[in-house]
Length: 174
Ligand SMILES: [Zn+2]
Image (cartoon, rainbow, N blue to C red; front, side, top):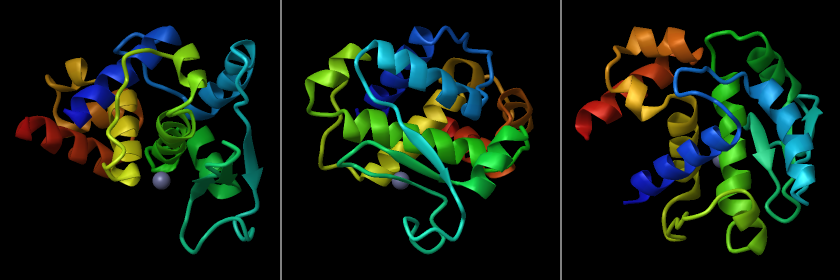
């Protein structure tokens, strides 16, 4: 139920942004675009690139979304990785934080309805699982990935080998 809700929500957001299912998402460009697009909807989408050693980050944390302000803090090494289109974790980390922003910061708030409708995410579910699930569904659309092997998923959507394998295995389980 919850994965299905997150999938449908992720697909709504992709559609809203004009992505085809076969399009790969360049996360840093998307973040730039969202800060303009959401401003038109009366929402703040504020992300900040910080030095890796900044105190806002916990140990080993790659990025962080402040739930009281909605501000997304991203380590500069992570942003650099995401910009380089490398097949590494950077892009997934950014979209994980976008998941926190959309599903948790905007949740239970009239602001959410300005972005998409028909999303009900039970609050008792683990927010980290939800953000990971959002990133996976958003970056690697189910309808395409269902026909792909992990290596094809990785190349088509510029994700890490691990993200592609997890995506593939989860689809096999469904
Ligand atoms: Zn998180």
